[in-house]
Every structure is written in C-alpha cells, then in structure tokens.
Amino acid sequence: MYTIEQIEDAIITAVDGLKVSQGVRTIKSYQGELEEGDIKRLVALFPAIYVVYGGSTYAEHGARKIEKITYHLFVCDKSLRAEDEARRGGTQNPGTYAILDDIRDLLFGKQLSLEIYPFSLIRQMPVWFGSGISVYAAEYETAQALLYPST
Image 1: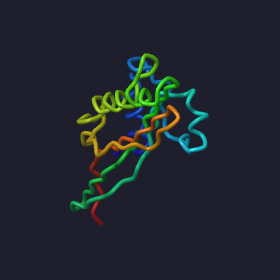
Image 2: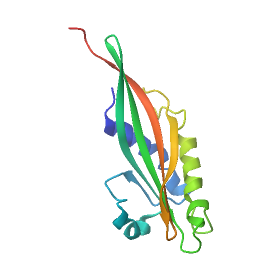
Image 3: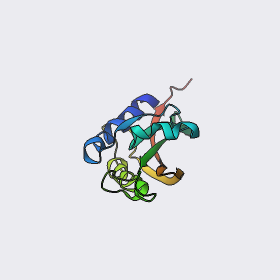
Image 4: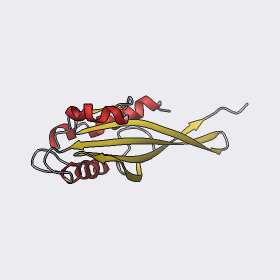
C-alpha cells in the first residue's frame, strides 16, 4: 500500500521533465497558491504545475478493499502579449493546452513504477483565466488494493 504522499511524489517526478521540454518553472505539491488574490503575485513562477490529492473512495471485496484515489493537477501559464497565448502558447511560453497534453502523455495509462492501477484521465476543466493568465485543472484517478486480515 502506498501513502497519498508517495503517489503524489511519483506524479511530481513523472512530470518533472516538463521543466526542460516546456520551460515549466514550478512543479510542486499544491499549498493554496492559487487563491484568487495570490494568482497575480504568482505569475513570476508560471508556467507551473501544482499537484494535490483529491480524495478516495472505497469498494469492498471480502478481505480486500479497492481504494480509488483522485489527484488534481493545476496547470498555470501567462502571457503579457495576448490573452489567448496563455492557453495556446507563444514564443515565450508553452500555454496551458500544450502542458495539459504533455501531462496526459506522461500519466495516462502509467503506473509510475508503483504497484497501482494505471492512471486514467477523468476530466480537464478551466479554473481561472483573465488578464493574460490561464489556469486549468486535470483530474486523474488510480487505485490500489488494500488487504485487511479477517477477524
């Protein structure tokens, strides 16, 4: 069984290569950075990916439980030149669309060297955009079997 932190760390490690390939500046566990008042202050750290545990559900199978685990990845970018460049990219930034596509390639169907179910992409959705800033969320799910001894 893996902890929430171990799986979250594996996700961060899996997408870390985007620092080089896409110029992503920040990849880390989410700590409330995107509260609306802070977004404009954080643009110096964009493009960025923030990862956070989204919760678990459990299904019983005798002495075994299957834990379905959700993670949210917040994908952020900015453009000072044009509003749509924050989403579509430009000469100075990759854009949130390209980062979302790359994350999908790195996570979807992968186990990240863990004994977990392969990640599936549940949905992607806009969170906030305006003033040359784009923030999208991607929701991924995996699962793991948990064994409980009978009493």
